Image (cartoon, rainbow, N blue to C red):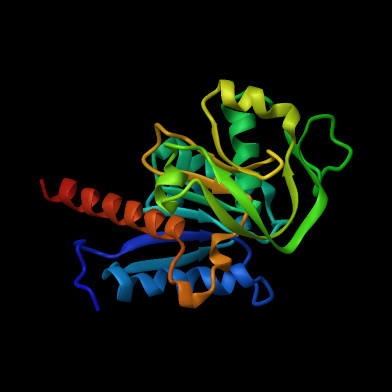
Amino acid sequence: MTSNPYPRPARIALVGDRSPHVPAHLNAPRMLAALLDTDGLDTDAYWVPTDSVDPDELAGFDGVWLLPGSPYRSEAGAVAAARTAREGGIPFLGTCGGFQHAMLEFARHVCGIRGAAHAEQQPDAAELLIVPLSCSLYRQEAGIRLEPGSAAAGLLGADRATARYNCAYTLSPAYLDTLRAHGMHFTGHDLDGAVRVAELPDHPFYLATLFQPELTPAHEGPHPFVHAFAHAAATRAGAALANRGS
């Protein structure tokens, strides 16, 4: 086991409606726990159901991981979790449904698209930001391209990768230019050019993926995105401890 380079465990909120039937819910805590052996990085992961999200309490965490599993019990709770992390500079990872609801949050609270909706919950809404995929990505693997110089490409060490999905919804292309104009960077696309990764470069750590890095097989070790997210959370934890001691 590698010695722990950080002064205390990073407190990470796993936001989602925990279920033994969702593979990501089983794998995400295991992936974080594996970092203790690979990096000496200790994390305390706490499940926060979407219908129990309290922004004030969530602000006390070192990292927020908005996990798959939509439709969530509370869309508002999922959106609030993404907003708390974005506005509070808390390291944020959003995967699959987490990506979708992070985009809803950004559209509503940064771009001013108050009616931005998810087709899974509001199929007849006038402003459908999140729409059904033309072909479901349920239990699929597919190639993606990463923008050179992006955080995603740097973490993967390549401009191409294989992504694992369990997904049926995506971001509507009709809103891409608006989200870009307000600062969202789309840095990963499938081989047909559809968005698969989003980043906020001015945030300490903000990465959202339509695919699920938590589906990486255990023998490959923690996915680089999860690895970087956990280290960003640990860095925040260390800084908070130092500030209290100064």
